[in-house]
Length: 353
Image (tube, rainbow, N blue to C red; front, side):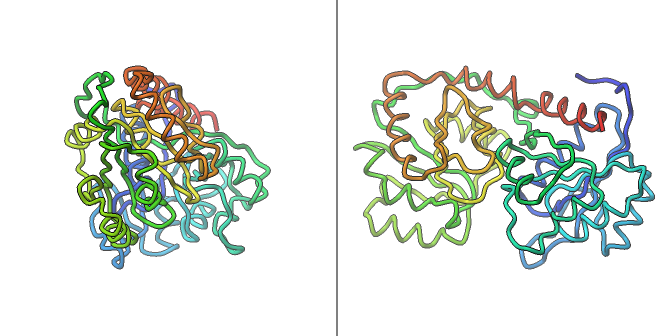
């Protein structure tokens, strides 16, 4: 759906746009999609956090230097809607200072859990008009833990729109007679529980399976040591940072099964949508908003990590018997999570408020 909208909006999106992650990806592509449909969109970001090595951000993004600066930028935009993506005291207070005629939306991209008593997300109760969660469990948890009484809805965050930027071949199921090629993509940190994949490798990989771990994080060194300790260096590999664009698509398509054994307080990891787009089935522990990605070609557990390895074993049997249809998984993505579909949903919501 493109062309001039029935109602043209001015939208201000506030989110941290330095570095690489879900907030940056969603905000960038939502802004792009809304602009293509005739809406005016401004993206405002906190300044870079030097301790994280972040310096760059898109040219179309403005950094704010203080709460007063942020408030002035929002007011000067004459926004119809201001949406905070992520969290932070300045972002929340700046949105509240936008004025009575500007609708204020908070997009919960985390798990909905209240992490501390003085949590900036509690400010939604003092003037925000709506809360959006990126998964239904996320939305429910946010309402419960923050006492939100106002309107809510659930809309997924936008992943990188691989299907419109690059070529994604239609995928068919390959034989796994020579062993299943397993992969993990994402942050390598303790809450992501990547070590489980190494500890339990023999339980699911059989005699020929292999595992590639893609990503960086503070748990990487420990996991590398665990691989060496278990004598798995010829079958389990730490691959480091994964590529972007067409190279990322081609990489996703060489694997048979994506594994996400997270025990973190999740929102809904975008890598699962990117895997769907490329026809790569996954097994994921059902934390946060992950259950909203349920489909017939993947397995999502109930959030009890004890059920994860049995789920992987079950999926291996399905792969071996040809009981997975990658093409159907790609169709599911296009029908529910494609760029056009998600921009449709965000545009309808923003116009409705």
